[in-house]
Length: 66
Image (cartoon, rainbow, N blue to C red; front, side, top):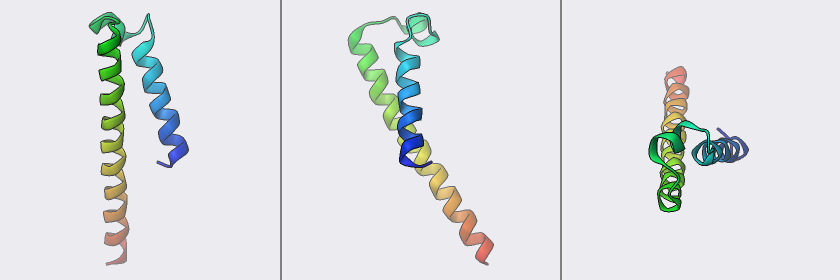
């Protein structure tokens, strides 16, 4: 995922977290501290997933060269 896709996906996650009618708010409420923690966790999670798939792509490329 390139940086533009990463930022767009992160923005979508933030919108989902802050959506008053969304699942997150209905499940966890809309406490500002909780929402901020959720935004941080979303960012860290997205970075981890991005790194994971980047590494998978690298391994796939190396295997094709064998």
